[in-house]
Length: 517
Ligand SMILES: CC(=O)SCCNC(=O)CCNC(=O)[C@H](O)C(C)(C)COP(=O)(O)OP(=O)(O)OC[C@H]1O[C@@H](n2cnc3c(N)ncnc32)[C@H](O)[C@@H]1OP(=O)(O)O
Ligand SMILES: CC(C)C(=O)C(=O)O
Ligand SMILES: [Mg+2]
Image (cartoon, rainbow, N blue to C red):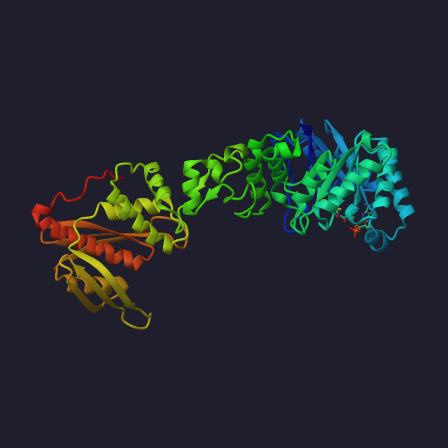
């Protein structure tokens, strides 16, 4: 297997993401995690950019022992001096020099002819060579540079003493075929190319950064540059984790590997996200929260039978504990039953599972994701209930902060009779309860009312507990719903049912045989 070197530029190009500003301590923390991840080279910053950046590079250089530390520098002596100062304490320092070579950059940005570009770059490499044994040279915007001139620049860099020549697709303009062809051409035409390493630095403006980096590897690149989570200037850089996992997953195709400790990927991703403040999109390859999550019934069924039906990588490889089967409205009975067993409800009979699944589907229609807590709440409500002398059919409410709340309640009795009543109240709950009293004809007193959110988010389940009294009978009732008024009505009716149940002593032990929380 050919080894591909990993050059991480999260702390330099990654920090060029608009809005990202890492302080020294944060940079050191990320660098130490990158070292743990096993990246070969860490570009810690651009020392000439500011005294703060110089200090950060210097502290990273001092803290990290097992990865080479790199400082970026324009092809100018003052920048090289700043990098020299910053990298003094590095165990294995490397200078990264760059100068743009494309016609657009030569003409408008640098205002230089080809010859001047060649001479300035060569002078910078030779100057730096006095202080650095390892020098990477990048012809910025190489991808839009005339191919023959790029060969000329690369040959100059090799002659002048660069140890790595990096080919940046600075503006993410390349297609994989074109980018691969650049590497093939350099390998075939540049004198002395075998003495240096070739590197690929891609940007994701057209969403092809990873594909381009992999094409470079197929065509002779020894190193890929990128960032964790793909952060970086504009649309970002190649995601290191994507390249590493592509090489791992498609070994027989690429016949190349990195030295990364793959099981540190997830941890590194989350640290970078936390410290840069850049959230990882849920659908991001490898490290997104959905990357190992399965929601639809057919996929979940396949996963439960054999994981490789729908997973080409295992989450454990990147340091994640396990895949997730997310229960939602597209989930099937198989995944739902498995979830019940996982949660300890392993003694439900077919009929109870069927009933619970029906309830679950109704809830999933109202709620995007159904959590364990939702299921638990739903099961407790459904399976520990008393006989339903009354069931809630419908609530209609009229509420305004300038008018008296009015509730219409439709209730079905055990004998399938319908009672519908409309009542006013001091508030919506009071109106609902007055209407229930009228419909059930039960003379009860509300002793206590409590409401809490069972789950999280805007569509959380609300749980209402009430205490109702009738004579010397006091019972609690419980209702759960995504709507708190619906939960309030259900809790009240549950309590009324319990009172009737208590009164009819022959119904006392009708709770079913399920052990629940
Ligand atoms: C593709 C990349 O990601 S390159 C890295 C980009 N990163 C950064 O730019 C972040 C750090 N940059 C900075 O802090 C500042 O731009 C500095 C300190 C480097 C320079 O600041 P200033 O001196 O104010 O110059 P400013 O940024 O306005 O302009 C850049 C100058 O560098 C020149 N320049 C650009 N690239 C190079 C290079 N590789 N070698 C030599 N000169 C260069 C430009 O032509 C321009 O020169 P001019 O002033 O003669 O026109
Ligand atoms: C400094 C260089 C390598 C760069 O970041 C780019 O060209 O994108
Ligand atoms: Mg870049």
